[in-house]
Every structure is written in C-alpha cells, then in structure tokens.
Length: 288
Length: 216
Image (cartoon, rainbow over all chains, first blue to last red; front, side, top):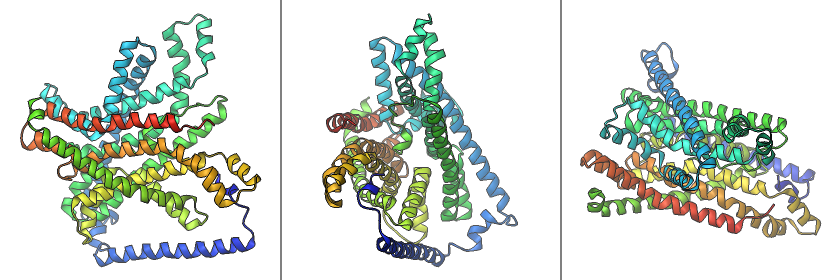
C-alpha cells in the first residue's frame, strides 16, 4: 500500500479523531440504509404476500417456486458448464495455431479473435439463435446459448492460454528440443501443462464471467435462472424480492468462485519459482 | 446486404444512440467508480466496508439482473423515469465496480519506494501525492480503465435487449423480428456497428498504453 508511507503513522490524537469520524460515517451509512428500509416498508414490500413464497415452507407457492428456480439454476449451470468446456477446447486450439502456424494463417486467427472479441456477447447469442436455423441447423435453444457464449469466450481463453505459454521460461522448450522432442510433443507434453497451471486462476475467474453471461439466455427464452425468476414474478407479483434473491444466489456462487481463484493463485505462486510474468487481461477484470 | 444499404440511416442512428448511452453511463460510472475507490482506500472502516460491499455486489451480479431490477423493481417502488434513464444508470452502477478496481489497482501499482523516496527528500504529503504518486498512478490506470470502458460499450447492447429504444442492438432486433428482414445481413450490420467502435478504441488504447508506459 502506497498510502501508508504518504504520511507519518498517526499519533494518539489523530487515532482518536479517526475513531470519531468512523463512528460518524457509520451512523450516516446506517441512516441511509434505514431510510431505504423505511421506503420499502412504506411501499408495502415487507408483506407476507411478497416474502411468503420465498421463505415459508408452509406457503402454497413455496414448493412450486423453489422447484422452478431450482430447475432454472440447474439449466444455468448446465449451459455455463458446456460453454466453458467448449471454450477451453477451442480456445486452446486457437492459441496453438496462433503460436505455431504460418504467418498468413496466424493473421486469419488474429482477425477472428478480434472480430469475436469486439462484438457484444448478447449479439453473438442472438446471432446463434436466429442465424443457425436459417443455415439449416436446428438445435435446442440451450445450444444457441452455448454456441454464443463459446464464440465469445473461446477467444478470451485463447489469449489467456497464449499468455500462459509466453510466460514460460525459454529454457523449457529448448531443453525439450535438446532431448529430441518434436514440436507437437514439446507443446503437448512440456509447455501446455505448465501454461494451464499458470493460467488456472485466470481460467477460474473466466468461469464467473460465463456464469454471469448465461443470464442473457432470457433474450432467447432459454429457461435459465433469471428467466425462470421472470416467470415467477409474472405470477407472484414480487419483483423486488425475487430479484434480490436471484442477485444473492449469483453473488454467493461467484464470490465463492473468485475466492477459489485467489486461493489457487496463492498456492501456485508459492510452489512455483517462476511465476507468470505477464498477466493477461482477463475479462473478469473488466466486467465483460 | 441490400437491407443494410437501404436502412443505413437506421443503423447510423442506432450507433448514435449507443454512443449516447455510453457517454452518459461513462461519465456517471467514472464519478461513482472514483468515489467508491476513494471509499475503499479511506482510513475509515465503515467507508471501506461500504466500498467493499459495493464492489462485491456489482462485480458478481449479472448485468441482466441489475437491469431487470432497474426496469421492474424500481418502478414498483413508485419511482418513474424513462427506461433510457434507468438502463443507463444500471449500466453505470454495474461498471462502477470495475472502474473502482481499475483505479485502486493503479494507485496500488505505484511502488511504495516512490513515496518513501519522496518523503526522504523532504516532500510533504500534498507534494508527494501531487508530484510523485498521482502522475504515475494515472498512467497505469489508463490501460485497465480503457478496457473497462470498451467492455461497457459492448455491455450497452444488453441495455438494448431490455428495450432502450433505438440503440444499435435494438435496431437489429426490430429489423429481424418485427420487419422480417433476412437475419444474417441484419446481424452482420449490428456486429459491424459495434466493431466500428470497439476495434479502433482498442487500437487507440494500445497506442496510448505504449506512449505512457512506465518502465518499472
């Protein structure tokens, strides 16, 4: 932290002042919070009608609501799982062609990467949904979502993997060539395993992005978590409660995933002497 | 491709609306994001906790959920405005968490030795901050902040999916769904519209990045 060296360590009086200021800001924040609660109560947002289906197992709507949302969550996880799997495979292939192939081919790959990276993911999903049937490919709606998400994320994963390969010391491939390995063997047996290890945290963070983007399935009526929430709201008329609940579930899952990423990063950097020198720009850091 | 040529004015207007959303949301998100970043490095614990909570919520919650909340949750509380306003605010709130983290990482990236050296040659707090820390922080903030802004431009399409009328994505949806135009040229047009913004922005960004990069 650079701030701490900007000024001397606070003395007893400055510490006391800081304590008063903390208490005051804490009170102000509490007051704002209380006001929000008051406004919500005034608008009748704390009635049993609106919360009952979510929290009271005795409520007639409790079981159908939880079943509906549960199925939605399963669909979300399913689409996210397939997307990340395909993105990993295709992304790795893209990264390898970009690293090894001839120049003109490499430029073609770079072009594809730039095109897919610069297009909004929701456009790609919609494209997959509307254009594939025109081309004579009829797939269940989940695959439109998976294809859209894969198109968007495979190029990001390709960049992550490429940065992982670049970050390895040159001696690794030189040593492998020296013992007589071929190009493909060097890549598959020596470079890729290390690159994946180095990039594991970035890949886990990317999972958060895919999971969040799965919620765009609502644009093509894929029955994922958010879309199911929509259906429930139409019947129960409690948008605020359900959105808060849906947001909470997403935050819990994604927060856990990012903690896992941080934990993995710490473990890997402890055991590896040459940590990845250049971290690629992952979408997780930009809110993509 | 005839659709694109015949309706080029619609696409141009869509591009304009998208840029307008991004301009408003961009300004708002810079203000909010800087404020939250200030909270996160503040010496007062409640402010820090508030900043951390803000970032955790908006970073982990899908933009679609934020926008749904703006579209249907807030009006249920009796606050009324056009969806252009709600959508733009939702986009800005979501992006502010990433702006905050970009700014914070920029401040943290200045090595403490810089401040220590400044202190040791006798510069005061204000001088240290103004002459040594901030100029370096600003330069390392530019690349991540630029990426956040490009991401925001692309995310504005999601606000279009909620029916901010007339932005680039909404134009495409309207043409393909309501007017039954051939889907592939329409979507190629929409994608081109976004690429016209994002690819030059990315090139500009890497140029600026090379210009202002500091060897550490």
